[in-house]
Amino acid sequence: VPGAKLQFWYEFASTYSYPAAARIERLAAARDVEIEWRPFLLGPIFAAQGWRDSPFNVYPAKGRYMWRDLERICSREDLPFTRPSRFPRNGLLAARVALIGAAEGWVGAFTRAVYHANFAEDREISEPATIAEILRSLGRCDCAIIASAERTGNKALLKSRMEEGTELFWGNDRLEEALDWCARRA
Amino acid sequence: VPGAKLQFWYEFASTYSYPAAARIERLAAARDVEIEWRPFLLGPIFAAQGWRDSPFNVYPAKGRYMWRDLERICSREDLPFTRPSRFPRNGLLAARVALIGAAEGWVGAFTRAVYHANFAEDREISEPATIAEILRSLGRCDCAIIASAERTGNKALLKSRMEEGTELFWGNDRLEEALDWCARRA
Image 1: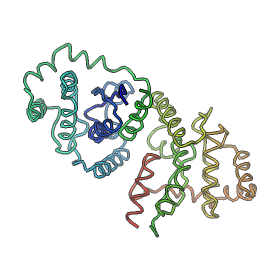
Image 2: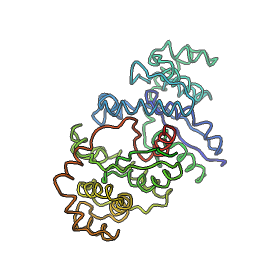
Image 3: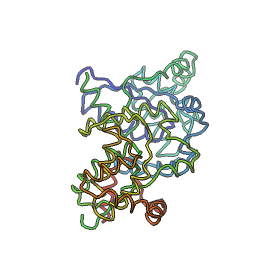
């Protein structure tokens, strides 16, 4: 549907966003919906609710179920999965870099690569060295990009990006519904 | 698949269980999977986590999203929906009666009728009068059944039914996956 757009809000620490990020471009293309990639941070939102850790850690039964559920989803989607040795990982630098990617047109590939590093390769995505390696693997000049990501204006842009949308669809489970909604309304 | 069985655990106060209960027999029949209806209570589980109210009430943003999400799901499934004026409602009596229904073969129709009363008609399902009306509408003798439901042995049966299953699938969103899993393993 020409003109149909979906804002995809995602946090790099978030587990279910891994399959969502892997699936979204294929599903969007099938409906002719354009994706706006919107990296953001869940940490400040959790903190505002009085949570200092992921609910998946605070409530172990919830966490056990989530990891098993994620494993089944990845298996169904043929996505490699390794339970990360550390969870959640800090996605701040990745989110800042993704903003640069959104402006320059490589945000999709970068986003998928960061999720793959975190949830398939158990790599420490909070480390600048990991992000630099991912950028180089995509043929990008890592030093210049990380410097741009850490500039005050870019940091402020990420902070300002926390307003609420109009029609919200939460999670990988609602990806098809969200895209259908956009396609119907375009 | 002959021999394939799925245990469907549900709490009458639970919102997403309304579409799940409405959909499950049709989806199960399509896969030749037999349903074991397992009414249970979320209250004691929430209390064990230190919660005194539904997380949908404790976190208003989560609640707003859930009601909108549920409205969309019901619309997609052509299920009537009215946001209940009281939430959550106490499903203790309904769960006790459903156990009798499971033994006597009318648990599916009763379960759907209770969810319909709660989430389509905004009726007080914690009231014995509502449950009695539902039983009569199904052609059942309400007094005898409610008396059986309130017997010590039946109360104890419900209490004992809180053990954890083996492969868990949470929610209306995982209904198809749960049934497929059972069908594959039968």
